[in-house]
Length: 326
Picture 1 (cartoon, rainbow, N blue to C red):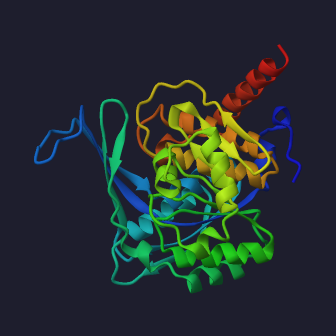
Picture 2: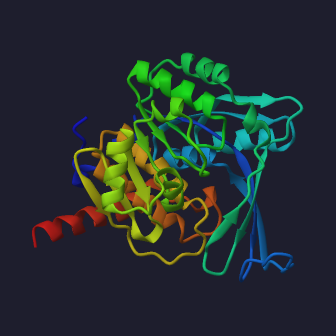
């Protein structure tokens, strides 16, 4: 895929991009505080909010916000959260025909603390997400009328289900993207069928055993055989595809709530790849989406529109051009 020039990218570029997300759904339970409580300490939160989350659902919603054709394959419980989660996804135009309701299991929840700097700490209780298995995933993929350009997954659902989805993608010719979050050991069967890995700095450290730098990320590509993008928060991202390694700068932003920023990056990057952008421009698109998301509270509710993302994206492309040709 040669990739469309960044200056020519518009909302129409993403309209026929097809992305399937295999992943989790959660309800986020967010408490905002001036600082995190210490061990054994009780503190008063100054604000509480509840919203829809889960890394799979978040990334699917961000991709849909850009106008792509998006489907989610996952599981919810038979409690009140389950139907509400499906309705929420459908409201963002995410295809939920691959979402199963699991009898006798609760839906996933994620208690989140956000401090005065916008930093967060998150626990997840997966519930029905743990019921996602290879049979459910393959059945949902086989029902599709078209092969998606990209299949995306994370580590909040069982790895054998994701490995089966990525093996299906390899046979069908789809690009596979793994966001290895939360940090955990990646099974060889899954690592061997992931085209791209997109960890953050902590996840990269857990996987590779050293801090992220252009040198260490390039070494990781040679060591594992996967292409890498390491997200660095306000410092942007490092991309290495086996041919080149480069730093992608992020726009400057005032941080209100960083929850979901990584998911915004990953969802937007996958849309860029599915639409034919170069990896570099897809990463710039991800940086634009992630940067805009931190300026608002919440997770999915903080995700920007396609017009806002494109405005920031084109400024990035223009600045890069000016740096090359002053």
